Amino acid sequence: YGIRGRAFAGMEEALEAVPIDIVAICSPSSTHYRYLEAATTAGCHAFCEKPLWWPEQEMRTPECAQRLVNDAQRLVERARESNITLQLNTQWVFTLPGFYTLYPQQNPDLRTIETFSMWLSPQSTGKDMIIDAAPHALSMLYALFGAGRIEDIRCDSPSDEPGRDLQIVFDYLHATGDCTVSLGLNSTDVLPKPAAYAINQQRADRHVELPDYLISLRSSDRQVPIVDPLMCSVKNCLGSIHSGCGVDETALIDGMEHLLQIYLAIDP
Image (cartoon, rainbow, N blue to C red; front, side, top):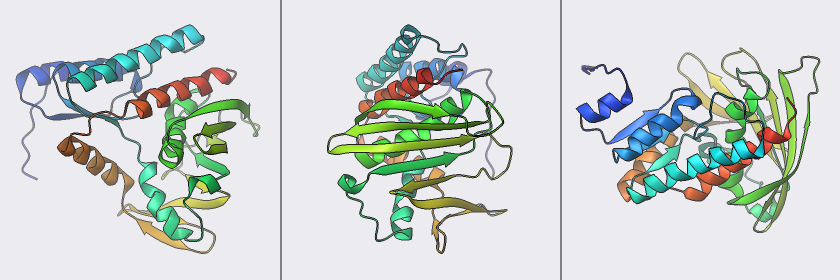
């Protein structure tokens, strides 16, 4: 493509050496805080993989979790004060138009949504699956209902392979009602990763056709092609930068608090 690259030992060095408008943080979540701190200090927009950040040491107590939330709040406040955009790469929300094409009879009125289910296949195992995959479900709930709170978290390991299969159920209480949420996590090395979600038990499975990586949503009898949600997520971030939308503090902080709430509720 005729692109000339220049290598740096770290992002901090790159930010000091060349003018950068936006950084994409795709490194392990334990490095996110350091890189986001550097980006926001430099007044640089940031597009970050989920979760916002997560330390290497295991979160065992509410006190540890609160420190993590405080760190997230500092990052968000710094981004707001610098008038920069800070967004997570939450791709699944951009599949919702395809879902409603697949199920045109499904009423998008959130007051009619009683159940939401999601099935994901992280490569990690044990409680790490929650860190890797639960942000997807949480972003969908925020897209569907807006801000809410989580109550009555339950968990089960339905298979004979402890640590590779988790079924998490909780209630999501929002402004106009509540929704029963089910999140099924099954660790697998299969590619492309099996994934699906259902609204009011109307299930849409993601299908990826290789080698062209053509993506569609499938029901039992229909298939609807969709635009690559990663492209949509990137375009949405760029659009937010150009329009000066800044930071959705509620989405970022609530997302972190809910992730920690689920993580701490699940036994090791």
